[in-house]
Structures are given as C-alpha cells and as structure tokens.
Image 1 (cartoon, rainbow, N blue to C red):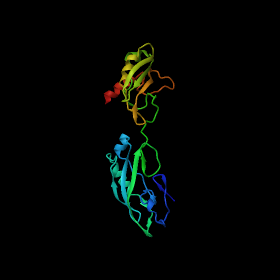
Image 2: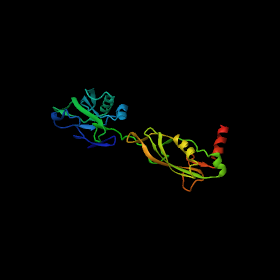
Image 3: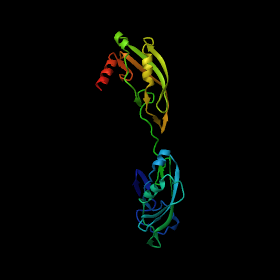
Image 4: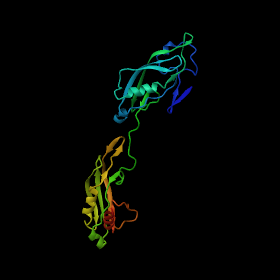
Length: 256
C-alpha cells in the first residue's frame, strides 16, 4: 500500500491492517507499520543561512497508532528546527502492532531527521529550496535597472539639429554600482560624450542574484542617442533624448 504525503509517495511497510504476528525486532524501527507521514518544515534561519544538520528524537506510538510523548534529544536544533520536527511527528500515524495477540503500544522509538541541500525522498529528510536567482539576461543593460534620469538634450545641439550617438562599455558591481565607464564610439566627434557620461554615471541597479549570491556584471554595453533614433533602437528615455527633450523636462518640472 502507498500513502501520498506532500507530493511524495511513501511506501508503507507492513499491511493495511494490524500485523498478525508478533514482531518485536521491528518495534524500534520508526518506519515500520507507518501509515502516513510528512516532512518537517524548515525554519527561517535554516533557509536563510542554508544550514545542514540533524535532529534526534524519541517518541511513543499508542495502540491506536498515534504518535505521542515526543522528546527532542541532543542535536543541531539551535536554529529552531525542534519545533518543526515536533509538529511533523504529531501528524504521523501507524497501523496497529500486535504483541502477544493484542494491539500494543511501542515505547521509545528513535528517529533522526536530517535537513540540508541534499535531494532525498522520504519523510525523514527535508531538502533546502533552490537558491533564488534573478530572472532575465544579466548582459542586458536595462535588466534590474533601479534608477536613471531622462536624458537631456544640449540646447545648442538642439538648435543646430545635430544628431548624436555615444556607445559605452561599463561594469556593474555586485551591489549595483556603475564603474569603469569607457567610450567605445562617439559621433559627431565628442559633442555628446560629457552629458552622456554624467547620465550613465548616475545609474543604479538592483542586485542581480544567481543561485543566492549577488554577482558583478562586467562588460555591459549601452547606446545613447540624441535627436534621431535609428530604427529598432531602444527608445527608453534614459538613453534617448529627442530634439525637444530638454523643453519637455523643463515644462514638467514647472508644472510640478
């Protein structure tokens, strides 16, 4: 017989009815005659610190198959796991155990629960969840962008109607700061480099997480456009300033 518990298929040792013969050799086996079980949960500290450990316990099984008298023994339970083990064991149940022709209780059954990154099936181990990771492409300069300002158009350039383009490479630190800015190309000449550099230097990013760790993102490439936007280019106002960009920004500031 099989019992479905929390997505796990647990093979029940014994039968669906009380054993018909004495089996004192299995009295101390915590899985013998077990009819249903559930894994202990994980405390916040265990998940946050990604800890591994084990909890030792003793418990009794009544003649009716209920778990009772749970005692947590010495072990790695300082992170609050003993409460989770106790709650889980209280939900376990057993088929009847026949001793000397009568249903009997079982005393001082030992059990060890483990927890950690290992992936194991069964009710006596709880696996840590997969470490979190940020969705998206870490090489995308707009991925996890937390702060930027609308790109300003220099007034003289707007009057002359001189379109411009500046391409940068830069790095993003693990904590989201922009560094190591380098101009890869600039047209016409260096007319827009100063404004574009000041704008990019103010960008800030959220941490990009891979398997639980914030990572640096080197070698980012981004294009800044002034006046004219090539077909298919990103129209985000952090990197694109139309001819009237400065006037639009000033008008909004006056209204506010």
